[in-house]
Length: 170
Image (cartoon, rainbow, N blue to C red; front, side, top):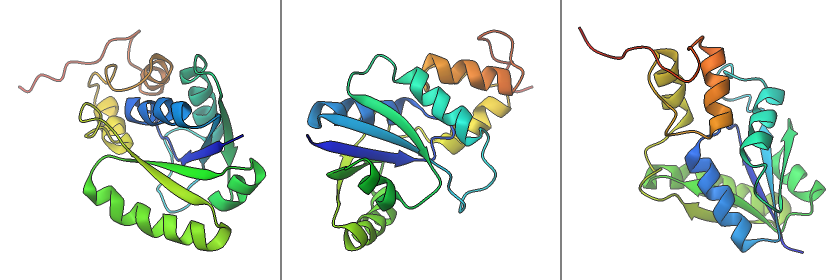
């Protein structure tokens, strides 16, 4: 059985992430999506449990996908779930430089290969940090995230039932 591990902070999980999960699920027998507590990033918008729950809700209809959370090295989780590969999504060339270093380190530490899946152009500009900013100021993020994530962002920022505050410049 070929298992892929797709790690990330997913704060929040968006449609670019979902595309990578869907595509990886066609290449592997199982995809384990690992929500990471990343100490190098600022305080997360959603805690680890909230992010895991959002991912479970967003991927519930995908077969052969399961979600775990982790606060350890990616290679340790890869060993735990018996992953034959780590999957990483790429939006732009700038993502590749950082991801390549991590892939080389992970391979050196564990022997596990990293597979890069580029997102389609319809998702290449979506970044979690941008979504947090747009949502914080009341912008409409519903076309960029799964419904379960949009609902959580609306609650987090006090937006009324699926609507966003006016973003009109005065």
